Image 1 (cartoon, rainbow, N blue to C red):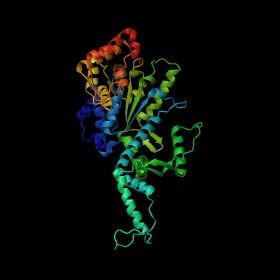
Image 2 (image 1 turned 45 degrees about the vertical axis):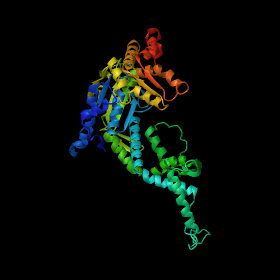
Image 3 (image 1 turned 90 degrees about the vertical axis):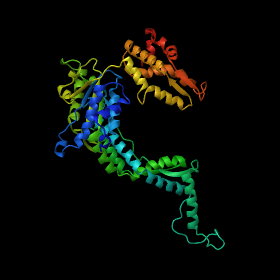
Image 4 (image 1 turned 180 degrees about the vertical axis):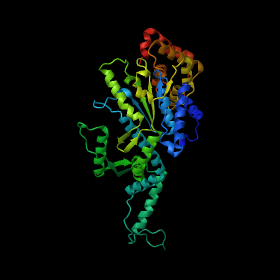
Length: 464
């Protein structure tokens, strides 16, 4: 299940993260070790596998410095189920709102989708053949059984007349060839598609939790007969609709559930953002918000420590899920978390604030750099966009200055700056700026568009 990271050493994992994230060396090293440890545990002595628990990580750093991106990219490298939640969205048990167990259910849902997608890819060829037959049947329905009565169609004066069955089969084969060649994509046919037979559910009653509600819905859905409806679509549309349906029929859902639960339990990553928002800002006793915050922490504790959570796909054990928590901790401190929860995040990493040079590198080097995204957007219109180094340096300088003067939102500031810089160009393409145009963004253009906005009186333009 963890074959994706079998060949990746911690140094290689860091190298993969470096392709998308600038700086934050300590954070990358720690998550790389945590990821490699998943594989090490699965290959350790069987008697010790259950005893080896992950070292959960607490990331401390301002917004926009890469906390979420590090966790998300880590999950992609490992091909692992990943879910991000915000601690501030949860409420203590007994209050209206999301309960903490929902994060585990979200993770299992993500894992099921991953396994289903992979298994659908495995049966794609067979499903495509089945779809081809369905489309062919809609165009030229087959004759049931062999009708031996001859018809007046002969291929040669000395040949025996063809039967209805043989003529039908020959016609079907001609149309099959046309379907494969894409000659009939715009032809309209009538197909039957499945529709949800799930009735509308009422509001959850007292004592009815989210997991119980989902189980009841699934049980009722399983008891309801599958309904189909006729729909007229083009062959191109039919292929997309039917391919999904036929691929789903070829998949053993019990096998999917079993593999998904195993994957979630042993390679799942849950990223808990804004953990500082549920930390009590004071050790003094009292009521109000601090009581609610501590209640959420205590509800989180058994999930992070390891417990069995009921989901609609079965029970999942959270002992070996990797939890990565993150927060800015501007007001509260990590020590304001309850001691038990602090103990479940033994690895603490402080992420660095971004410098002007970091902004420059973020604009230039990552695979998904904003500059490369805008280049790709305009390339779709046939317009060539380029940035020289002086322009990138100026953009980085302005973004850093705005972050210094206003609220520091890290790399997210670059989205605002780049949008302001390129909005006029994006609006004028393709009406005023046509295909084959070449646009070079240099320092002069950046200063013309942005330098006036850096003055304190105009900084409100950059506030998100």
